[in-house]
Every structure is written in C-alpha cells, then in structure tokens.
Image (cartoon, rainbow, N blue to C red; front, side):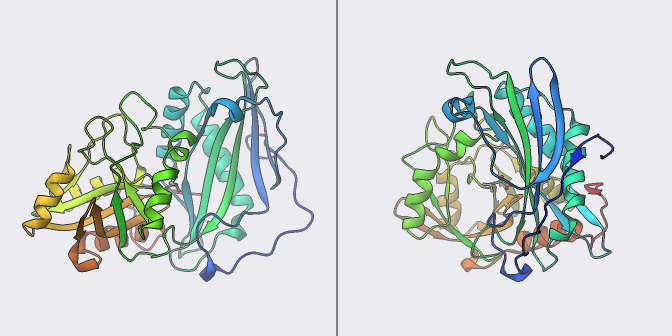
Length: 356
Ligand code: COI
C-alpha cells in the first residue's frame, strides 16, 4: 500500500533494460504501470501499480468510436546527486485537467495524479537512464471505457500511466532539423481541440507528417486554419524565431498547445533580458526576414524534443537555410540551462524541480 492506498503487485520476472546510450524515443516500456478507474457514481477509485500488460476493453468502449481521450508527457531525470527530479509536473497536471474539461472527461485531483506519477516513478527508479540526454518519459493518459454507442460523454474511464526510458526525440539529436511548412492540411482552428492534448489532433496530422518525411523533413510547421498564413506550432513542439535580436513565438490563440517548455523558454528569456514577444507571425514575415538576413535563429521547444534547433524551413518552393544549419547561440543557451536544471547541474532558481 502507498500513502494514497494504491495497491501494488510486482512482476515475477523483470525485463532486461535497454542500454542507456542506445535509447531513442518511446520504444521501451518499464516493468510496471499505474491504472485507476472512474465510475460516475464513485469518482476515481482503485488506483493500482501493476505489471506492465495489455489492457482488456469491451469493443464498444467509447474511446474506440469517438476518441474521448487525453494525454500528457513529462520526464523524470536521474540527477547528478542521485535524486530523481521531475520538471514542473504541476503544469502538466493543470493542462491535463484543462484537456479533461474540453473533452468532457472528469477532473482528476491534482494531488492524486501527482501522487500516482511519483509512486510509479519511484517504484521504477532503476529504469531511469543516466547517459547524457536520456530520461524516463512519463505518459499519463485517460480513455473512455464505457461500452456505449451513443454520442455522449462516457460514464466510465481509465487513468493509466506508462513509463518509457528515452533518448532524443529526433534522430538528429540536438542538431538542427529540417521542417516543411504545411500548406494543404490544417491541424486545428480556434474553438476546436488544438490547444488540448487529445489523440485526434495527432491522428489528423499524420498524413502531412508522412508527406514531410517522404520529402526528407523531420516535421511539419502548421499554419492557422483560416488564412493559412500565420505560424502555429510543429505538432510535437512549439516554435520560436529570432529576428533582429527579438525572439518571437506565436501567441496562444486557442488552437496552439500551451507547452510547458514553451512557458519555461519565455520565462528564461525574460530573466536574461532578451526581448521575447508572443504574437501572430506570418510565414511571409519569416521569408522577408530571411531574405534580408535578419532571421538569426529558429528552434522548437517541447518536453520530448527539449530545444530543437531548426536549420532549414521549406515554404513551398522556397528553402530557407537558417544560421547556416548550425545550432544558434540562444538555442544552445536555452538547451544548456533547461537540461542543466532538469539534471540538477544548475541551481533551480525558478522552483521548477519537484524531487521524488
Ligand atoms: C511531448 O513533448 O511530451 C509530447 O507529448 C509530444 C509528443 C508528440 C511526443
């Protein structure tokens, strides 16, 4: 039993762990998972840490038909002093509940959610890799499990947490990636679900992602759904552009995901007195700035991706090479500072670390 009365059942045989320096993203899973049930007459109940295993669901479970689901992504780090550190988990849990609200999924007590994350990570601490740039990715998610074919919010759910030891999200590691501006498909519009972490946003983006990969790009850069002029996000991360010494990121407008790393980047830039602006920014503005030699840097920011420099942006037939395909000064400083805090090598002056 844990302090939250989660029951624990342990695996008989533990899996071999992958070598830290061979990790990519999201391929390996730890020995245990967390599962908790919801019933509309009982609330959330029966939290358990159990062996990692397939889940059995009724084929009529509403998740399969109408996609009522939300998820989060955060990481646990093995700090230099042997402690286990989480980075701003309260922000992820707040966003989980915002996503729940939008998707008509019941709220979850933040302390209970954080307690479940911490208990599971503590239980699986031997799985936290310690090679540079590696961590234990935490994926909490909620699915609608009520067997019913009518369109309505479900009355039953499962909250599940799985853990995955990870390395870099992109095969390029922290080297600059190539991104293609998507001009045919759109990811989200204001009033839709773009600002919440729900599966459908990602399913709907796959076709463009496939096209981009076939053309040699890592990801697509999404534009606004009305005019297809203004930059939104990359789908796995938020984006920033440095033009004439000012760092610009698209303002949260209802269709962009409010990234925890995005928020941290803005806070750090302000702290360093580097001008940072959240506003609408068009592809045309980027193209002109590039043409005039004023586009100094571009990078993405996300939990999985951390800080990912963008070395090339393709807008239709216009290929913009940014900073000579090199990692920019600000991208490097942000990466070093954020990871320095996450791994406990730099002082946590912002109070972002939650130790387990
Ligand atoms: C994350 O950065 O944690 C995400 O959830 C993005 C996902 C596409 C890997």
